[in-house]
Amino acid sequence: MTHLTRRVATVALAVSALGGFGLATAGTASAAQVAYDGYLDAQEIGFFYNSNNAGCVFDLYNKDLNFNNDYFKAYPTSASCNGKGQVVGNNTASYWNRSSDEWWVHTGPNAGGTYEGSIPAYYIGNASANFKNNIESACWVVPNCENY
Image 1 (cartoon, rainbow, N blue to C red):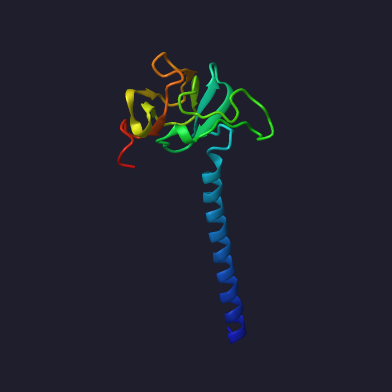
Image 2: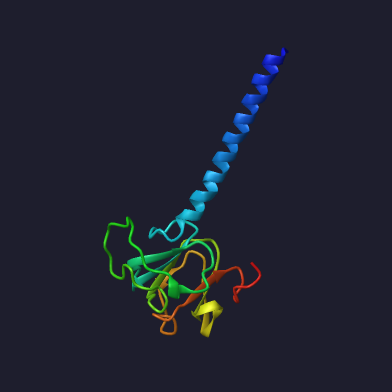
């Protein structure tokens, strides 16, 4: 193999590695952008403004310890729906857990409040009397939202 052939092979390998890195990081960025877009994807939980999974949605992929700085969105963003732009904290009437994990909801921020409850994997339904328009934080894995 000549010096020129080795150099071309080295450059090709480097470009290939960079291309693979670009694809790997692009996939990660896309996953991060999926949540909070107003569209309820698989592996997310959606909190709806109205009962029976109606109105705008707040879609969540990971824990959120303060719903008071989050807002219901429409998908696409140009669409309209009940609750669009309203604060999620103390405004959730129903939910749809599209993930394989159990989610925990709390009636106060930072996993606090009077009530703590769980939403089983793939559950769709209306919030109970204790939780309707009273949810302010959510997490998965452990009930107290710690250790992850």
